Image 1 (cartoon, rainbow, N blue to C red):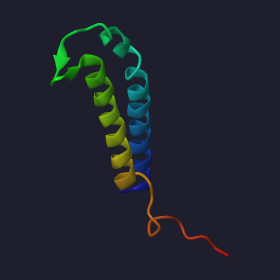
Image 2 (tube, rainbow, N blue to C red; image 1 turned 120 degrees about the vertical axis):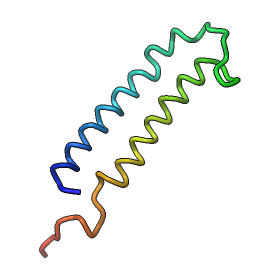
Image 3 (spheres, rainbow, N blue to C red; image 1 turned 30 degrees about the vertical axis):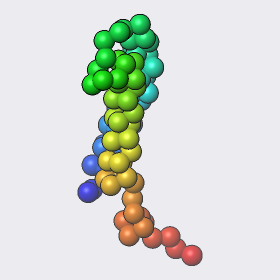
Image 4 (cartoon, rainbow, N blue to C red; image 1 turned 45 degrees about the horizontal axis):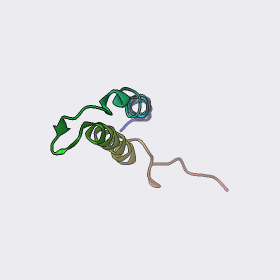
Length: 78
């Protein structure tokens, strides 16, 4: 992956992660008194779990595609 594509993907993932950090606790507060379960668990837990999965997905994608490995990093001169 080229450095410019890596940088663009990094910014997109950062924006998605920031959105997940805001959406997790923010609108989820309205689900506190919702008695309807989602997949057998309370809606507030399902909401938080959804955004947790999004955050973990961002970290996994960043690990494989954005963060450079030792062989990709520029060589340091002594």
